Image (tube, rainbow, N blue to C red; front, side):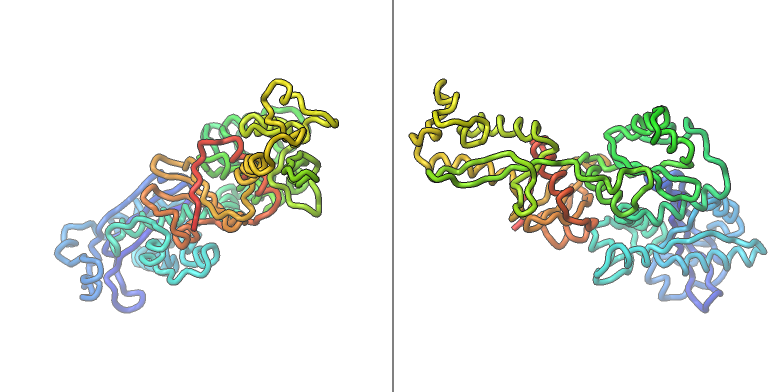
Length: 454
């Protein structure tokens, strides 16, 4: 649990500042669960430059509660939470100073979104809250007011959690929450989970991730882990202390995150680095008569496939569909052999490429369409799919045939702008697994929106 906050102060000498406004959002990693926003009477003078910056003046604060009147609420909303703030050392120091004046020792773990941003979003021009949120397309209102800055920090922190592929932030939080307690009842864990698409992480009592999975219904899948009687499920049931998750909305994003994060975290109950699940590929060659041939075969080490398949049957099903759609010849697609014409020629559904009756240029143009549709080795594109909430979309970025990463954006973003896209994206590794996942998903989901980038 996190307490994301922002504080406005009077300014002045070090450790003599007073709080003029505070906003705290209790955040469980997915949504805000509680909030506290208040002006505070600092009982001291406000520096003129602070008045100009925040718009908060002494007249506004005359009837505001003094700090001792809101102290109990601040303790309650931050209890058992990690304090998160943009430049947390400042906000935490101010809080400790105020509580020290009351004779109360205030101690909390802290996280700084400046430091996290520098680690997870490198090479930004500035890490000030205003410039950083502007570059990332995070909406902000009431800049230099506690509530506006705190809300922007909530959105920024959500993005940072998504970019933290090795789950350092979450693991540390679980260590604090679990302490030395025994694992909670498995039923209690299940009740807290959503019936939505995303990636889930099963943790032991130390916060370590022992299993990563993906599902279109996280609650249902975790229920299966906790009720199955196979060897792996029994081990998980004995070792689980908590389950965290990330909603993705898009199954494609979930598949890509699962693949990447298994390789990064190497959970003990996942199969060895999630070995590749595909064995066959689509290849092309020109025969002696000048016809472009397509064929499904085992993957070749020395040749890049046009697209890949989980098994031979999946590849043959794809080929059958392409033959129907583009009026191709069974023989030139490897489904028939022999020296005579193909079967489709007999029923007048093949134009005669198998017996050299069809013009090679006309046939090859249709065969090339299959290649162009299914190969993205030279393409730059953004694949737009469902988001986690209403008004949000997910994006998978491919540049010059290289998978760059995933991200989320609000509908008012111009995602065909590469600079904006790059700042939104969580970088990921490009390998044969990701290529297979993307190509397979594009074949199966014709509704996915593809924006070609220039």
